[in-house]
Structure formats: C-alpha cells, structure tokens
Image (cartoon, rainbow, N blue to C red; front, side, top):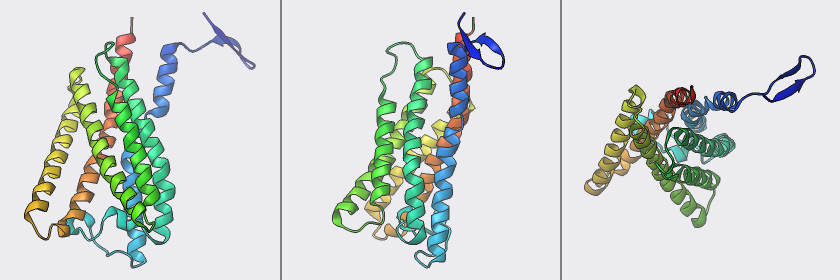
Amino acid sequence: MFFTVDVAAGLRPAPSDRNLAVMNSSRSTYIPLFIGIFPLLVFHLTHFLSARAGLVPWCIPYWDGCTSISATGRSGSAFILFKVTMLPTAAVLMLYWLTTWNKIHRLMTPGQFKPWIQWLGILAAVFLAMYTVALGLEGNGFQLQRRVGIIFFFTFTYLCQLLFTYQLGHLGLHDWTHRWQVMLCTVILCLGLLTLVLDWQLDNYDDYEDAFEWIITLLLQCYFILSYWAWKIMDSTAGLQRSP
C-alpha cells in the first residue's frame, strides 16, 4: 500500500490506478457536450451579429439557405468572435478524439483495432484550425486554405464518427446511443450523396447548398452531443471489466 502525505489529515492511501482513471474520466466527461453545443452557439451568434450589421440576410439558414456558415464570420465583430472561439475549439476537438480513442483502447483486446480514429481526429482538428485562420482574409492562398480546410475537416470528422460507431458495435455496445449514432451516420451519408446528385442535376444548386451545409453541420454536432452518453456507457463497461 502506498501513502501520500496530507498536512491536515496525515498519511492517507494514494489513489489506485482505477481511481485515477475514474477521476480523469470525470474531468473529461463534458468534452462531447462542449464540442457539440458550443460551435452551434458560435455559428448562430455570428449569424446574429452579421445580420444585425447588414452583412448577411436575416433568415432561418437551415431552411432558406440565405447564407453560409463561413459568411457569418467573415467581417465585423463576428470575424473576431469566430476566430477567438473556433481556434480553441479545434484544440478541444483534438482532445475529444484522443480521449475517444483512449476509451476504445481500454475496452479492446491488443491489436483489435488500428488507431486510425485518433490520427484522423487530429487531422480534422488541424484542418478546422487552418480554415478558421484563413476565414475572412483576402487572397487566393487564403481562399485555397479555407476550401481545403473545410473540405477535409468535414471529411475526416465524418470518417471518425463512422469509425467510432463501427468500433462501438464491434465491441458489442449495441445500446440506444449506438442505434442513434448509426442513424445519424446514415442520414449524413444520404444527405452528402444527395448534394452530389443535386449539384450535378440542378443549375441553381447554389440556392440550396448553404442550407445543406447548415443541416449537415447540425447533424455532425448532434453526433458529438450523443457521444456524451456513449462515453458514459464505455466508462461503465470498462469499470465492470476491471471489477474483481
């Protein structure tokens, strides 16, 4: 038995590895809620600020498609707000995927899964930061950086969510959260394919593109919110596996 010194209480047992894991888990519990909810609040706030300044129209972007998410953060006070909030969010997103992989790793047998989810998650966060830095800046180089950043952010984020969903199912965690995760991934895939078909078939697809962007972003964020409960179930399963 190891002991630590507490000046007020004298010697007390040091926390075990299991207790440390529980404490670390409790500290990170709300990361999925932050990643899911905070960006949505930022997007709607920048839309409000930009609309009030006359930079974008007043509308319901999920339906009207009157403006893109990027347009809401290109100018004015929304420009500053977008950058000072989304750059730290990119760092938290990286932490989210690293923590997710760690939780999966605790439940699997050695060699069961490759760590693709953590590397793709890191890349998604990096491309989100690239996009955020370039947003609102003039020049062909920044325009290319924005385009590359947002395309690969969406792509790698969706691939990570697919991998997370697959690995939970492979681990036998077929609970209600997993069913909703499967549904969200399926809807996002169908919408993505639909946008490709519409872009190919419709001359005025640009009138609808921004609405699809808002809807797909909302669904991706809902997946992060849902993973709050998935994390809890994974932690409970890991705790049961360690029980004597």
